[in-house]
Length: 172
Image (tube, rainbow, N blue to C red; front, top):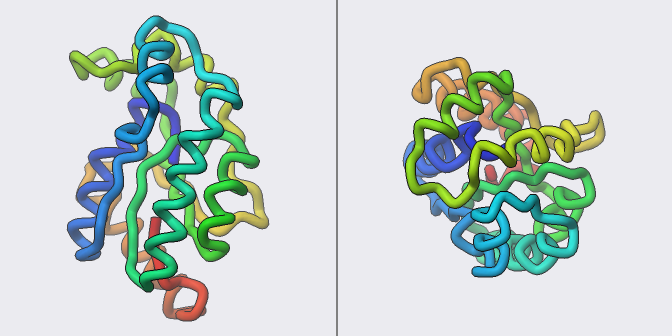
């Protein structure tokens, strides 16, 4: 989870590969109207995100019902978005890719052709509600190299699974 440009897709793909599990790019499930709205520089509202989040929740629930792992990238900016996703799997773990605005903005400006313009970063930062103490998950610093991030995430997820294997069937 995290704002656009924090590295969710890159880290998600690498983590899934390392874990030998499926990866789902959450942005691929945005309806065309959402992509057009963001491309035009207009932030999405809760109504815009509702159907998209429901589709992602269903992907999570499907993986849980099949007993398979899944890594899914999704901004998950607000607590109630995460609550909806968690309704697909109460053991869902959120990994918040966190970094300074300047770094994220530079990354956004360096990726040509993405539908999310850098001008929307501030609206995402305003919407971002950090993980709460009662939410399963943790924060990682995006200043680390991707391989260091993956190692840190795998280690933290592995430690959590060893502490309570029943509650750590999947890593997202």
